Image 1 (cartoon, each protein chain N blue to C red):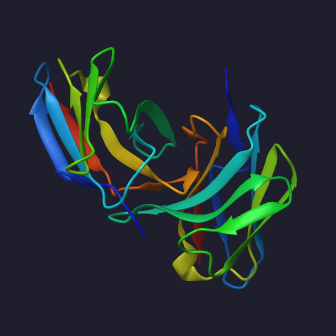
Image 2 (image 1 turned 90 degrees about the horizontal axis):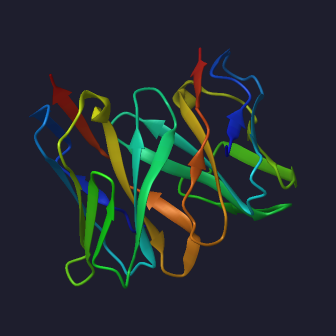
Length: 112
Length: 112
């Protein structure tokens, strides 16, 4: 059974803290993605990676960075968390073709 | 950036009825995908339809694609309580089949 796991389901952090969200997939997928989901806005792409050490900015990269040192792991980093980064964060992975994505369960991050 | 837009935003029907959701997008695509999200969870891939296909079936799901109108529809027949969820269409950028853009979703409620 294919699996994408995320390090936490719920996380509470303080403003200014550095936050790491980790995502691991066991499907040997080339592509990995980080989205945030907010009510009424759907899923917005933060960053994606199409290979180890390769990354591309999505639609809303400001305030975030990513790291992909190994094929199976893709980390999202909030360098200095702010209250407007309170959101649901979803990780996904996909092969190159056909490209449908497998999602993790999500991390609900609250920044106070 | 291109985006799938679902219509309606919310839909409430009686169990056993059919549910139809529509998606419109802006630019040429390689494929269009539909996903389901149960409350507070990650998304699950339902079906992918390629740009050279017009209709596709999977169990109680039927997806159509009209590339001339840049639109797609998802039909769920004989709805069940377990179909209550949000449904998203996602389109790829023709130049980057790995990256997909999600719409804001349709919230489907099935009344018993």
